[in-house]
Length: 171
Image (cartoon, rainbow, N blue to C red; front, top):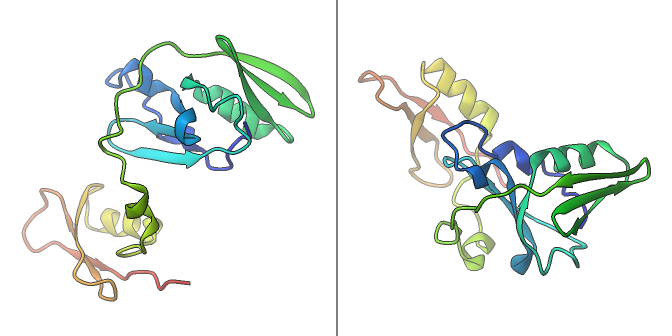
């Protein structure tokens, strides 16, 4: 399969609080996608050129994806208990992680939900900057209307502390 340009492995759980399976990226061959989660966030990225992945349901370690992304024209091939990274620079193999990935299908939106236009678009860097200005990394959002500013309040913050973030205009 081709290596996705999106660094999905960033979403992988790394702490001891994560399930063993969540310390890896799930290959969902049935729907030609990769899934990664740390229990608080979940990322889904489609994969292409995935003939060998179509029959594969399992895990790939984040280090295989990170390494492949550093190489030129890299592809991933699943062979038994290993994933093979082939690139112009040569070939590397990584063991497939053991463990089970939690059943996340119930959380995933339907294809029609992701195909409809977004409710609102935000610049996450501006949201992080606003949260920092409000003194809290965790925020509650009140979306009033797609064209209006979004009210941002710090979670468990003092009364009267809030901010506004403007939605992005659709391109």
